[in-house]
Length: 180
Length: 167
Image (tube, rainbow over all chains, first blue to last red; front, side):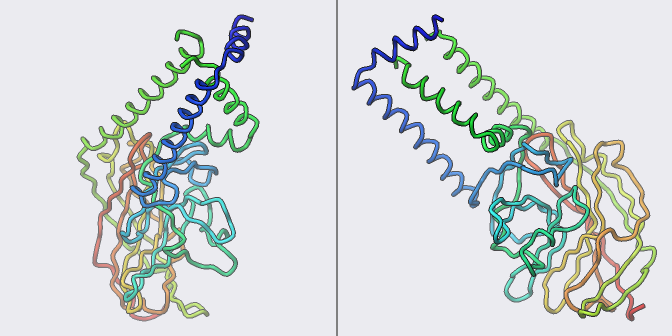
């Protein structure tokens, strides 16, 4: 009861200048986060430097809810590397291992076939209609590091958006009612 | 300044920071390990060697693979993903890598092994260049850590070649 009473009191005592100050601080926090994200995109050379593992196709190595750190360089793609790629027509990127590589003599272009460690067959069923190989432009990055369990936060917020709204609402309330 | 919300926030921030530092140190400790793996692959038999209707060569072979990869395991290792790839060059392609067999080694006890197996994945060329060609068999391993940086290496074994004629 005391907590609710305090909250109501502090909402009543808001002044305009203080409110503006807090709005600017909030804006600074959000933009700093955006700057860090974009800087990571530049440093790692990948469009999404961190991805969450969504399926169990790479178990027992990567489980659903783990996060992977990606890096993209111009080094040639070789068998065994874990790559993240987009298939035309699918919006969710897939994280699987390269099992076959055929690199052209002259142009350096490469045909790549991938397979999830936990899948029985290779990924040709996942590729677009008539597509037999992946090419360099499909690949967004290589997985270089990994943290377990941290991605569950993202999965829960995506699959149950109500939790996202509750969290943002609570954070907003905390910012508004704080005295500094 | 000492409300429940602030204390919870402080506690959460501190514990997340400590966890992140611990993960980073665990990953860095992997660099202290100096591995000394060994491996041997024998091609026991070429089961068959044909040209497919589409014009690509395909071969099926049986191998004896033995390896000792125990020194690659550290306390931060979750599993070792190993695979054998055939590597060769053709007039059209400067490099072809075809994975023939792979396995997951979950623990140090299983890292010293011997297996007699035919190729798990179909060995198909882009074209019909395989007759009489020399190829390498490379044993690759990828160390997947409990947390942190993944790293990979390989042993290249040379001196294998395809038969001169289809059979």
